[in-house]
Amino acid sequence: MDTKRTPPAKPLVKQYWYIPVLVLVAVGIYFSKQFLGNASYFVQRDKLQLANVQQGDFKIEVRGSGTLKPKSLQWSAAQTLGKVQQLSVKPGDRVVQGQTLAVLENPALISELEKIQWELKAIKAENNAASVAQQAQQLDLENAVMEAEFNYKSSKLKLDAEQSLLDQGKGSLSALDFKRTQLAVTQQYARWQAQIKRAEKMQQNFQASELARQARLEQVENNLRKAQQQVSGLTITAGINGVVQRLPIELGQQLNAGENAALVIDPNSLFAEINVQEIQVKDVAVGQQVTIDTRFNTLEGEVLRISPMSENGLVAVEVNIHSELPKEARSDLNIDGYIEVANIKNTLYVKRPAFAPKNRTVDLYKTTSNTQFAEKQKVKLGNSTSKHIQILSGLNPGDQIIISDTSAWASHSSVKIQ
Image (tube, rainbow, N blue to C red; front, side, top):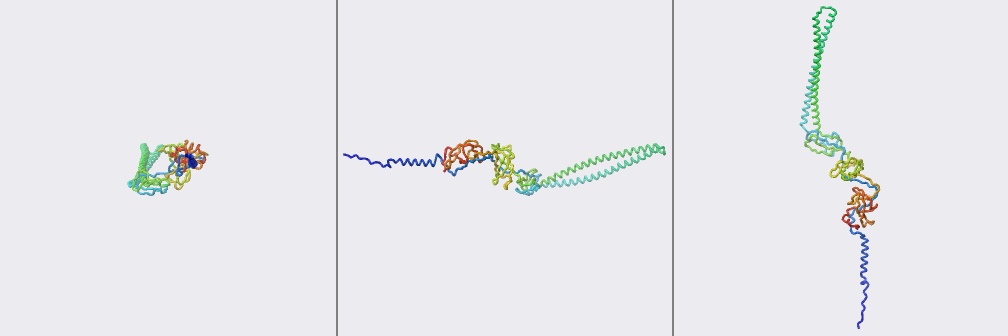
């Protein structure tokens, strides 16, 4: 008869082998939860840009790039045709008003000037000779008038004496002689008056001749002045005190009258011209405060003028500079300008994140308190500048957000920062 055998009992380890596995899985899930949280994406910390939300006055600025320009400048141009014979200055040289910048040559002008000078001397000599001749003729006429007057008065005295004798009935004067004396007086008077009229006519003739000679003289003198001005124009001079900015001519170059030869500017009177995008210039107004960045110093100023025209999507804004000009300030120096168009008191703001348009509600990633995770947060944005943007809701002072590009993991609500 067979004996019933009882199988040996399985060890507990084999019987409950799944329990340690479950424990390990649970522990793994726990630590994974502690490590990953709700994150479904990993990002490298060194590839992120972070910024903290701040509270305070928020200045809204419009940014533009531009250059410094001189308020006072003047082109010195050639006054006449000539070839550049001498250059007396170089760009960057300081000059004073009237200082020679360049000298031109034009032999034909010099020759014409000498010709007119000789012509003027000849005309003056001719006028002088004509004047002496007229004076002699005038003396002869005056003598003729005086002689006619003398003859008339002598005849008149004789007539008066004969008339007295006839009235007294004395003497042997005949009526015929008396008539002859009367006729002589009449003739002498007529001659005297004729000489007076002749002298007057000659005097008018002398005056007309003098006017003609004077007109001719003035014409030649005017030609001389023009020739002298043209010759003087061969020397190009500075019109103002300042610095030679440009000298676009060279030795031997032929210049036409009116052609620019040198630009002189006053380096102590500069203003800023900032180019602002036409979509932003609507917020800019005359009198607004401006900060100018020269890369080495910052200057203060205010908007002086806004161009009514737009060029390539940009509008020129002129800024009057109030600050003392630094050493690096010079014409055409590249600058950046920040025009303060508004100042919002006691508000939240942060460095502007990538793809964060103003006056919109967007999703931003806010870091947790231990900065190990970043969770998506809806944030309402307000006004903005080129560097910062206003926070209307969704964040608090001191919160930290990611401001670098997050488009690669925008579909994840939580990311792990490692």
